[in-house]
Structures are given as C-alpha cells and as structure tokens.
Image (cartoon, rainbow, N blue to C red):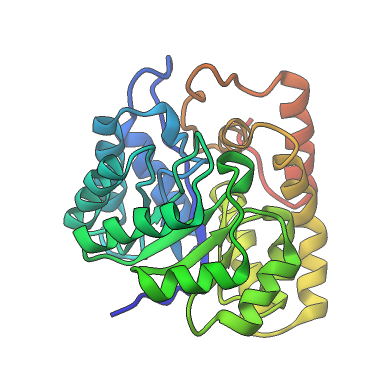
Length: 299
C-alpha cells in the first residue's frame, strides 16, 4: 500500500562523538525522544541534514538501524538512501527496507546532472529491485537536476516514487504539483522558509529540519495551519518561526542545526570535517532567535 504522509517529518542529524569520527548511538536516542516526544509526526534520517555524504556505506546502514530501533514504530521513518551509483542506491535501499523503514528518500546522483532517460532508468532499477515507496529528493543546487512538475508526475507513474521532498525553492512549481499532479505524486515542502506557503497551498506534509531543534513549535504550527485552517493563528506562530528558518538557510545547514541542538540541550556532536561548527557570534545570534521564539535554552 502506498504511504501517504501527514504532518511534519523532521530532517534529523547524524550524532557523532566528540571528535566526529564515530556515530553516537545514545545521541540518536536523544534526538528521537526530543522530536517524537514533542509531537512531530515522522523522521527523515540520512538526508542533507544527516550529513550522509560524509558517511561510509557501513555507517549509513548503522545510522538507519539506530534510528529505526529508537523510533520503534511510533512514527514513520523515511531513510535517505541516495548514492552516486545505482548499485549503491539499491544496496542501501534494500537494507532500509529490510530494517523496517516506512519509505526511502533518494536524491539523484549528485556529481553530474542526469539526463531525463537516466533519471527514469535509475529510479526504475531501484523500483524493480526493492519493494518500498520512494520519496524523490528534489535538490537542484546539489544535483544540477530540476525536474518539471509534469516530469515528477511521470516519474511517479512509472516507478515506485510516490512522493517528493522539494528543496528547490520554487513555490510556483510546488503549488502546480499540489493542484494538478497530487493524484500521481505527493508533494512535501522541504524548504524551511516556504513551509507556510507550502502548507497553505494544500500540502499535507513537509520535511523540516527546524523541527529537529524546535519540534513542539513546528508540530503546533502544522496543527494550526494544515489541520485547523487557522490562518491568523498560523501567521502569529510563523512570526516566531520564520526568523529561525531564515537563519538556518543562511549558514551551513547541518552545522546550524547541530548548534541549535546544543543550545536546546540535545547535543549531537560536531559536524564532520570539512564542515566546521558555527562561529561563536553566529551561535549567539541563533540563541537570541530561539529565545525570541519562547524556547528555553540549556546554555
């Protein structure tokens, strides 16, 4: 049965030990309880926020297992399994499916932009090899690939792609999918500062990195806007959330999220080199924004 997502799915980090060399299993458990306990409706490990490009294949499988075990079926888990080759993507996808993932999120190979027929062949091969729903990860800044609304729908009709996370920043294209192609593919906003517009346009779910840091605010915002349809109430909440989203999008995203987690008392270790932690002055700015949103800080 095709999965239809509802609510906010938090894009989660990969917690590391103090020197960034090993995955921190206890850190994964902390993240899950912080996020799921605050009412967020799903998790997406091993995406860009999860620094998947810095992990070995073995580490990626380890992180998937840790998150799935910690969640223990309480909410959907969409595991990122995109890789540079179709063979590695199939291997990671098969592992995620066997481990109990709800679905997988697959970014197109991201070194050289694929031609359309290569996109279809890649996702078709994974679909033939593994019986699990696929979320297409639309990330044109990294992949050089920016499918049209019609191509997204066509891809879904010919493969196991059932949804897409849109981190392209094109609100018009996203709305086009919502209004004209939602029968073929479910759109999930994945661009933090467009969360309001995506949900207001009619999207039923979103993948949101900020939900790892401020899960209760994000869950409440979804309830206000997408469930109750209270536009005025959602606007009031958004005035607190938007500056945080804006901040995250002006820095290295994974590093900024990890800084936020330190600030709210759910540490996840440093980003993995070559990415550096946020500079002290930027962390101070983030702390000020969180306090302005009513978040109690741990440090």
